[in-house]
Length: 340
Ligand code: DAH
Image (cartoon, rainbow, N blue to C red; front, top):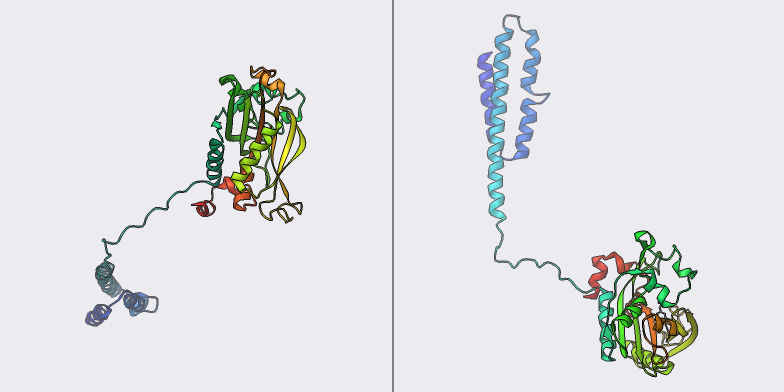
């Protein structure tokens, strides 16, 4: 029997050495060591031998199995190594190829529009002020002539901080007060910046941007307001854009107006964007209320001024045809990449 095993072993080992790939070796392993293999058959047959022969036969069969396993492992490792060397030789790569550049950054549409607006107003002689984003109730409301019970002070609209002692400015109008405290008239100032309101849907974001403008001098009247804003709109949307003023109300201006422009999409014929009216509401404005000038330490008998304010997101959305304000705050690179 031992002789038979030696013969079997020689056959098995030559079977292994003739296998030349990992799949072939796997097949050999199944044949030689699997459930239906001769070795398993021999082990199962041990029970039929005479008891005194079993230990020696068992040991010999086991040796055969170990020899087969060892030969398989060696061959597997030889072939694996050979395959790796072959792959490495095939996969050599050209280190002289130029590297891939990291994507280039670009400006955010709000920043682009802001720059354009600042350029236009700087060209008209306005200087730029920023003012703080965290404000006092005084400058955000009281000094701007808001009555104590004005609905804009409501918890729903205003983000309060420090237990109601401070707030996140709800508009850029308080920069009017800062400028009055800082400069002696005459002055013409724009204040672009971030503002905050408890509001969120397709057209409202809790954080957005406004641009405030105001001009204080001797003899400033409503004609100056109309002329300046028309000039601004002509520079922004072209000289064919028409403007119109409607009476309105703001606590800090008297009289107050809202300005519409002819629709930037249809030119005034009426379309989906302007809801068929041919006009689009674009900003609020008015003559600075004497109470506001006084609160800022400026004599309203000697000086007058006009002020205006508008949302920058709206200007950007009209300019680029963006219909959901949230796109401007999600910072999705696929969206932002279109403005490079
Ligand atoms: N502060 C106003 C707002 O947030 C916008 C505004 C309207 C500003 C009229 C002005 C103005 O200076 O005269 O809705």
